[in-house]
Length: 409
Image (tube, rainbow, N blue to C red; front, side, top):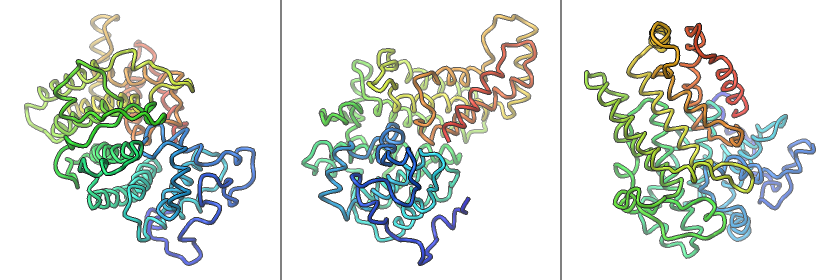
């Protein structure tokens, strides 16, 4: 595996600084640098949209991007290289090194000041964190934020200038993608957030619509955060809107708790948990269990649900410190009292998270941002296996979660 500094700084003349003509656009056959196999007949753009896009849906719909590649080839070159690289990650037994170098090298060139450059950097940042290249991911993300701020993406006017409603929606989604990903990065690095935008989420940039409306090009009048708060649960909102609201709860209530060592921590934990529970209650079962034409659930919504349980797991770990000691004590106390009692408190969030991972959820489609939440869910369950003699068998759940993580990458 290449070192992170090599991935970012490799300026060797032998490495192409731009994609080859084979990568010029989504209508071109799969790059010749990949050996000819039955899988290689699947264009990497198809793989990107079938897997990565379902949880990171800020790029324009596939047909729209095809058209843009024809009308704005120079502005789209970096994004095309990025999508090609990320799409190739969903193929086995294929060397992605050259594709990765193409995309990373282009990120160092002078980028066109467009929304497409911001989207490419954001996608590379998420992919880098999923590949355990944390420093690379942070560099890419900071570049994306700086460029987005220079463009004025945080203003309502930026999207409103687009005459095409689908492209205007893509702009709004990119802003909220940056907002949610920044908060998840802060969570991952256990930092209080210090945004490159004005503090807090925008109350004027419209929230994204439902993905099926976006893909169909039927863009409704966007709802703002101010309207979301004012109207409350009197109506149903898009999965993106719920996700943004959850990240806002993290920013306002969970992040301060994770840096709180005072005696008030237990009370703050209870209040933060109540806010997360209230957030989940706003999502009705009809929306939660809606199945798309491809047999999949709404991955944006399930990304948010996984994060919600991940937040609870982190808060429990922060309050109790060592999982093994607390879980052992909880399980032993339960054995000594009643055998039909509910699971120990520290296991409830991990078990509820696992209940989400049903047959309609394909591991490969999960966001790299979720993987750490799944790993954190495994930790208390592993300790329960070690200390839970005579209790329900958690071993099969640990094995299932390990296999799910393996398939997720």
